[in-house]
Amino acid sequence: FGSRQRARAPPPGRPTGRLTVRRSAAAMVRISVLRDCLNGICNAEKRGKRQVLVRPNSKVIIKFLQVMQKHGYIGDLEIVDDHRAGKVVVDLVGRINKCGVISPRFDVALGDMEQLASNLLPSRQFGHLVLTTPYGVMDHEEARRKNT
Image (cartoon, rainbow, N blue to C red):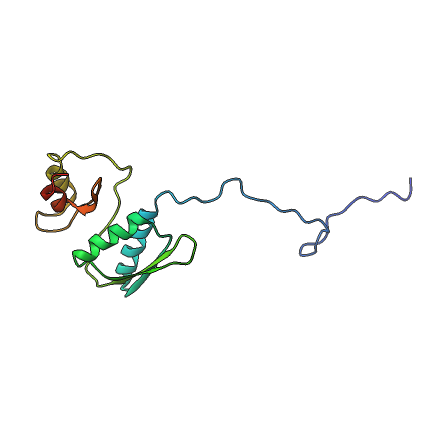
């Protein structure tokens, strides 16, 4: 009977001698890089920052920010090529109240564009809808002028 011992757990804080590595089953995935970009810009604007670093970069983000720059909502854009997804440094001027993405994207007929603008924008003279069209990224007034 005599020499049998029970295995005891080591005291807390002591290594057990075994190393186990657990990996999570699902990694975080970016659903919409444009939404992440605009949320970062809005949050930095609310905090009173002068610049914001946006990553990752895409062609749609660049065109979208160029439309915002054309209307005077943001200052200069500096595109940083890091041989990966890229980064954009945006200078803020303090004119953005709210910006966001309508997801999922949906088709809008030319006749329905005015109704959509009145539903989403606070007034007729205030704000812009930025649309992706076959002719590029443009605001709703330019899309109506070009009949796209």
